Image (tube, rainbow, N blue to C red; front, side):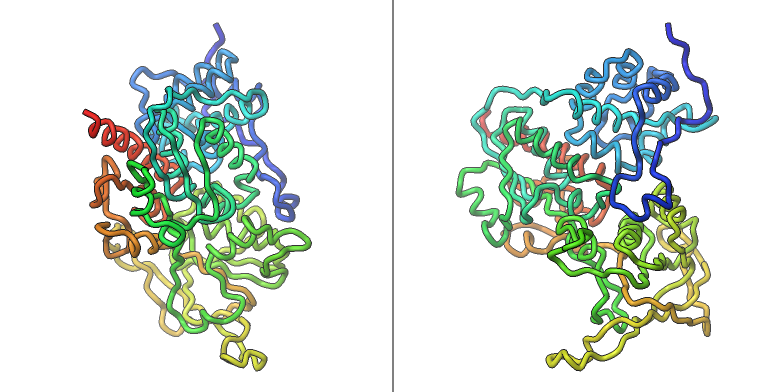
Length: 475
């Protein structure tokens, strides 16, 4: 019997050196080898009460798949993961395991938790490299369901329903399936070939993916029901960017993070001959402190920016981005301007723009220094401006990454669909059921911008509820 590995530290993730990766779009993390994966798996104590599973929004049977790794049965490990997760190669890369499954790991009490996410990535990558098997599906049951949006919520819902024998059609507004996985997360963090492989697996299970169809424009949800779909899941995401409402946001050179990342990721602006315009070189300020801000800043660096700043109004301790992403950004030379807040974007007029000469170009960003005051309603100390501390940051591109709101198109074209004051679709938390019979929703369309794995959990819950709803009509 192989001895357990009682090391207090998890095996480090091999990665490109910072000075190399800062100038290419290749994946930063290189993944575990078979030997390293086995060594890390031996750190798992196979706890009987499995606390790690309680931290996983899609309830992956974590000790079971790790036990298969210990046995050298990597394909068996994949099949255990795929019973509950439709996107294992994605989750192994972008899921915040440190605040979910790994936060519950017993090994984390007196050391570092087991590298669950790294092991999940290893298993998925091993399967993709060595096997063409797809998850088993039940015989066709004759029922049709529609999925709006091919992001993590929609793909998860589609995969779970396909396994149950449903005829599933996914409608995607853009020309490539994957939602935020392809337009939002950069290539160096999540290669698009990985996303395409996951989509191809769903297609092999019988899921029909229809791109360039905007539900609410090309077709309405009412028309989907008229065409014979018995239930609809809305996973249309949070594609409406938020801005600060400060002077100068209309200048050329100001992007929402959504636009900036979509141009780079989906429209391949990082190529030498891009078909879409984007900044090249210069000095860039990214406003915000979440994962999207880190992605935008690191993308700008790779596009050739000579200097990139992260401007965030709170301190490093309050920064909401994953620690790994923050550390990678710092290693790559991105400068963090913490406890600072923009008050105006500066620019000069553009006489060539006859319609609005004031719609000119960015020349800088005026900021004010902040200090932390009393806690707000979420318990975080509220940032307060320091009078007379204004200064100007010398930049010619500004990316606003302060969050997004749910896509408003579905709510404006669908009868009987209740939404909240922030534009999110109102649902029953446990099932994803909306105020409209037969319509379910989940992910960012409900919550606003959140994590990939939370969206997957919502898609999974909705799939189970849709199955019960349709079968209930038969009874």
